[in-house]
Amino acid sequence: MQVRSWIAWVAGVTVLAWSTVVMVQAQTVTFSDITDAVPSRFFDAATTKPAPDNGNKLLIGFSTGYDAKTWTVNEFTASTAAFYHAFAMDTISFLIEAPNNFYVATITYTQRGTRTISRSARAAGGVHWVVDGVPADLGLFDTNPTLSGTVDLTGQNKVLVPVSITCGLFTFAPPLVGSATISVTSGEVLVKLLPLP
Image (cartoon, rainbow, N blue to C red; front, top):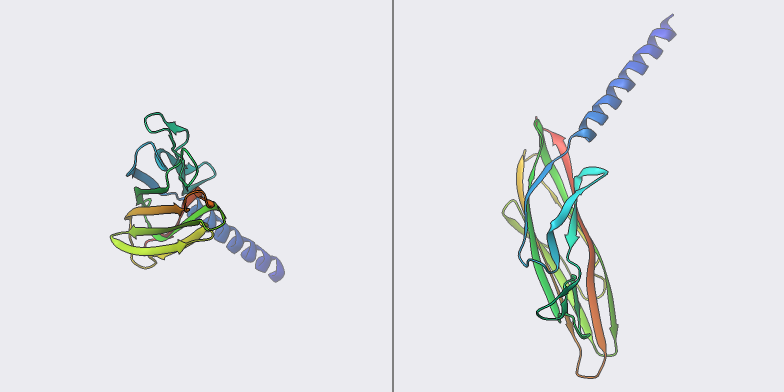
């Protein structure tokens, strides 16, 4: 009889623990005031949306197509090739709001990209961000534009957090000697929540 009581107690604790985990996972932030500094090129605020399978992940949109006035590509790419910008820079900003009884514990930015160079050409870039008014360096690169960085706000009980991310790409090649292209192909922001004390 005692064994059955013990099994029932363990089952009850397990169900309670899992229901708490599900409750925490079901809580999602609100991303609002999404803007970018260079409309119609590079980052695209209009297509920046939460991921369909995770409301705490913001998928950053990127512009596509050509600028009919300058005949240049709108993608977040810097290149020495014709019809591209030799450098590309943009800032995307947004506000993260935690749901009731939760706060923003960590924010992680991850970007992926590609880079190709030939001969004496150069390609490089860097990413900086400002989270809740505090600037930080996410990284400089001259080989691989893929990077990730996290800001830990655990214990600060922040329910509203403004974020601004700036990325710049640069290329150079001597005339008729080599070529360079560097691109950011995806970017996302993942927010982790914790219950308010």
